[in-house]
Length: 351
Ligand code: SF4
Ligand code: SF4
Image 1 (cartoon, rainbow, N blue to C red):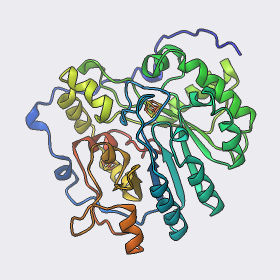
Image 2: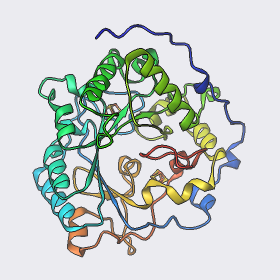
Image 3: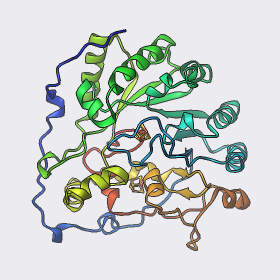
Image 4: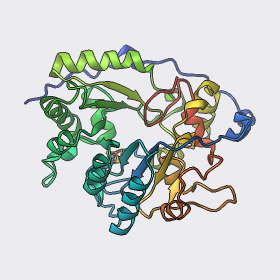
């Protein structure tokens, strides 16, 4: 299918008012102080695994700093430990696979099949364009066969905004991929869930600092546009805030915007988001088998710790025969990105 060139005028929903950023450095309150209490862990129900840094794209906002030249990935030994954990702990309801492009890294299919055969829900965080890379063309059918929930990045419904963040031609391939998924029943069959992910452009000046627009209204805009122009259907739009981590942080630092952006996020703190922060009921695991409270902490090398301060690994969890050994989530200043406005998580807005 030929994807027509469409207007790049910024739609109304995306022209959100900018929040005041004039607060000086003295206004910045450490995140832990702002919370006023320890961020406690709840019973673990989600195991998120970052399979590695290899990816066919190299997006400007990537907090993982993934790309085609990165080679770090899961080893067969750690993959086996993870399968043992999936088998051992019935409380794991969902396996959430991310990367890089998770499909390109070792362990993707063994983990999918281990989890699905034990009745777990499996999320694949897919960049869509991978289905056109030689050797990966069977992925959409594989996803449908195993009833994976696809969470796909599409940071705008307009071509120029997507290609600017993700690379030339990405919008075109993403549209073709979404049509392919629809053809297989994704976004139509209640068992084949297809969610899209929006994140704002990375700001190049303080007057461009933005939180995601209201999730429900932006979802309506995405649905109307993608259906009208391409016949595409999907289930939900998830809006995610850019946290100053990875390439986003480097980009902001080059422009001396890191601290102003953190102050912007802090000024938008919403205490109602805290109850549902994703770090409270998930574990995030890296390709070495180290355990973190979330993928952002993983990228910043902030390990999850047991009560005595020991960093956690999957091997240790298996030895203890217990997933609920973390009392307190490790927080850092970038946590303000998860609590700003309507909140942000791998599952979209929080309130
Ligand atoms: S944002 Fe996703 S698709 Fe883009 S480089 Fe990072 S892992 Fe790959
Ligand atoms: S970055 Fe977000 S998800 Fe991670 S620990 Fe901080 S608040 Fe929790």
